[in-house]
Image (cartoon, rainbow, N blue to C red; front, side, top):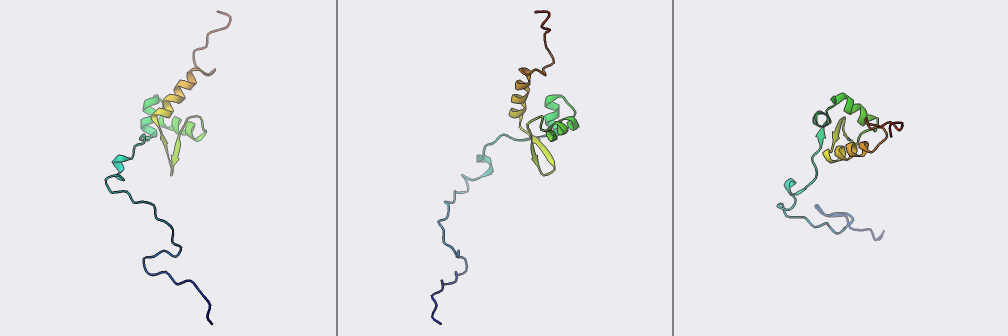
Length: 103
């Protein structure tokens, strides 16, 4: 039966040919060249904020503090925590609230 079927791919070839992305030389794709802010674990972030690690984990679970969950562990960026603390200073929940009667 003379059907025109596509030829099966040869070993090492792709069935659906697509342009391959350029491969960077090893020196350009080394992990040292990737720059991102390292993540802090709950212990180090809690020391930074001077709270108990379990308190910080609970706050992360409730969405009260910026955090990333990787697997079963919470990770924190120091810059996000700094911005969170600074934003809290201008918040109504800040510990120092002058009485309006004294003004």
